[in-house]
Length: 443
Image 1 (cartoon, rainbow, N blue to C red):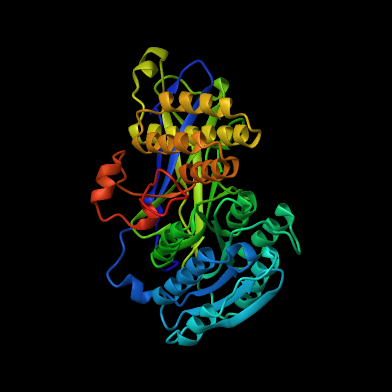
Image 2 (image 1 turned 45 degrees about the vertical axis):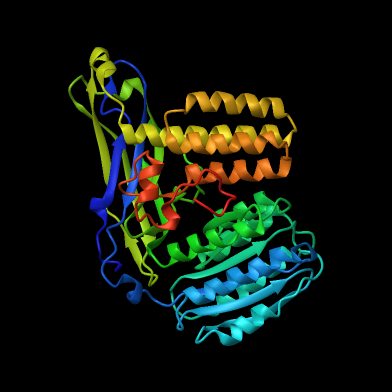
């Protein structure tokens, strides 16, 4: 994608209702959709070289199958990349060691040998391992994608351990073009830290409940990275004086607005904005009222700035009786249900953290009734009920957090429908597929 390529026609603003009610304050829920064009022929061969740093936790708790699966995932990454892509390898326990510098992959034989030699060790200096991954990529020339891929199964218990401080460093490096994705394994890692690092670091966050669940999220990430067309995507919104604008999604904030997911060919990044329109700002019935203007900026894969034209939304003011007859937009309603379900999952997580399983069950039952009409949400809540029944606090808390984040901060297919069965029967990329349980490596 070149910086001069205009994507303004792919920014779609859709209100839940196509009008404003006269004589009262209005809350307007607006779905913002940034839609990428379908992938051009041969787009994969045209992308610039990528630079990845694979940072693998080899602490004692990784001994056995977890470490073997982690090594298998690292080898999968090597098999997926091109000889011209740069790959660095880092292992860490309480000590940090750079196994291979960020250099073109070539035939990958030396890097595979380095991976094969990783053995389990001691404690977990997670920040030190991540920092070494950052350092390996900091000197890579060019403006192409640079990403640290961090895998850990444990708590950061040596070196810097403060979540806020580590996330701030991830954000600072993201601003310099080096992003972070995280993979948590099992039930003992610090999910709040791993999610915070990825959100602040401009990458993605995944987890596998067991070692056998680990490969599928790596496949998602690599497939996504191979199909990116716009990265570091940022949304800004303005409204007339006296109006207020709030973000309904769980998206990382920026100085100007919010950060959307990196955009892939044939997909859309989306968010719902809630705009409060004061009654006194409304014009006469039948006239249009300007509600919102948005602007989206990002970077091409070559690091060139892409600025989309500002897009605005104006709605007619209608009488109360006519407003009551306006139908809700189906897609906006569906996305609002997903966001409400994400909030419900976070409430369940808070109850699970307090050991209040009766409240978890009550919240789950209420959500199941409230969101029964949404196929994906219903499947998520059914999986959540089964997990909560096990009364395993760490398992429930991780699944609730990752499922909540997936519902509210994801890429979607441009033609996505409610039917999961239709999705399963179509050639939908892995990074666009919707799962009932985020910790399971299956769709």
